[in-house]
Image (tube, rainbow, N blue to C red; front, side, top):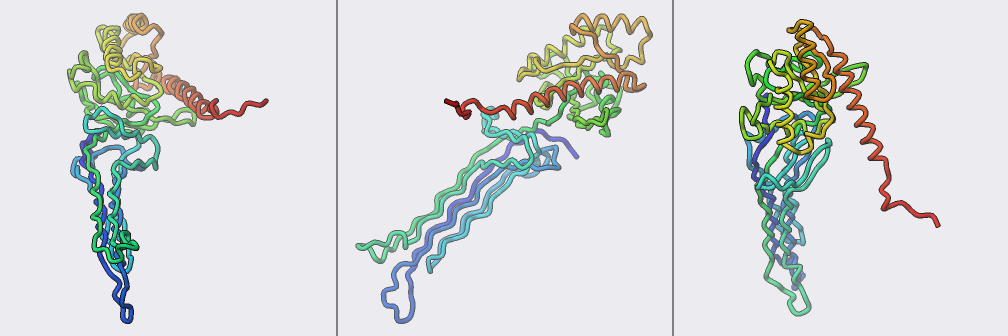
Length: 349
């Protein structure tokens, strides 16, 4: 399945049905009077987060969604039925923006969340509505109101507990394939990973989700390489695992390059908890390890983990370090959710 994390969509809600002009005609009933029913309401356009989707690829092949028009009113005071709704089913983590791609309409972070994007038009009144003591046989009815139309942007931000960042060929995809069942493409050339990947890691009978994004290079926030657009997929993560390849001549410079891109991107990525690991250490001897660990420690401000996905050296230690931060933030979020709003607390007198 191809990965698509952004799509432009045109939506239109249904028009309301027209009211009916009708008169009751029945044997032995000379003045039956008006009996035209109202038109039905037009269908709405909704967006709903559903389980089982992790891409917006469906919206590459269909970009127009229109709800149905309401049924017209009929005689015998019959009101027209409501038009069928149009529902855009999207993955959890999808944000909906206005046509300017900046104004946020809604953020769907849980399965089952549902938001109305365009309301259907009201149905028109039938001639029964206009009956009065001075106008007992009205011959007018209202047409239905038009529906709403707008163009929106759908933008997917994967929901994961941990995010992998680093330069190209830092070993991110190899690490993901080692600790999860994910099967990303792995090759020895830059930008092997072109699309974000997800995997579920398990350590000490506990699980968390890891997101892998394409590598960053200097100037990514200005469009260099494949840019920094995929950093949106680590915005929601609780912790960042920053991998620095042991094959780098200057691991400190590599670390500072990626940190600079994270801070230039903004959106709180620079303040997220970070675990730094020197990856691919199986390619180094003892002296080289000590030298590069010291250089990376000076740049990061703390001792990095040593990691080799090929030999599984440091893999369990890295997973436990990630799990510790994930559980700590989960507990903090749970406590925040359970704390009552002081505005609604009663004061005893």
